[in-house]
Image (tube, rainbow, N blue to C red):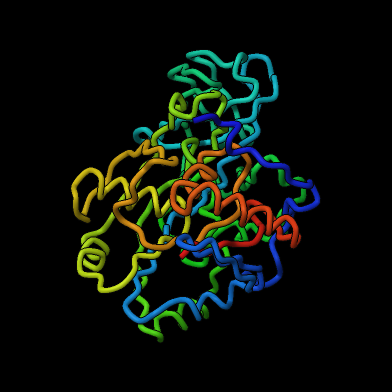
Length: 338
């Protein structure tokens, strides 16, 4: 299976640069994964597709202002880092530009001494492990000095940083938003609950595993980076007793559920690191339907949705979305695959 099999042409004008004024005004392409039938709706219409006793699984991770700009203490060279995941107290794996300037012992200064980071390990692919040095409360300092880690294809400034958070974001630690959830409003979730839909949170802190490009031609040779996940006892009980469908909000919720079901054969209170890679041929064990966005060509997320709904139907849906000028990627429109 080739990475190029998941490529498609997208006009640049269809890459959404800013979020809509109202979250649930985004469009929604509804795809029947059995028949390939397509409907064109708006996200607020999702309520019509949800039924009593469906379980809607959301990822309640919260994005941190993970992009920092600083200077190398010795030379004052400009350094940019993207914090990916915490490995232990105050130690983070970070993607560094330019990485060649950073070796073990290098100290980077952010905010004129308010926050410093010492490199304690050098890894491949531009990744370094830093120990952060500071006085005070780390996340308060980060909130002051860091910026939201918007993807590189977004060139506009984000006027309201909360628009790169879901309305239910709770557990701090993500380097990117679980973007399928950006379409939900609190009002829409209340409508779903009133209809008898059960909302069940899981946590997956989005890191390099989700958004790293696939740079190998043979899909099976791609190595996923691990990301931290967590499921509560309450969510496990809800899922084990579900009467209707399990509907995952996003590929991150999907990967969490599929990881746990693959490991244990049931849902249970647990946490750990997952590097699960889902591509066509994978047999889904946990989810019945999926709310997702439109994904980058040749990405692992494109492969995941192609595994869920068949590559043929996904490409048919994407061609239809392009023809109808849907907005793509993080701030773009949505799909409901049922």
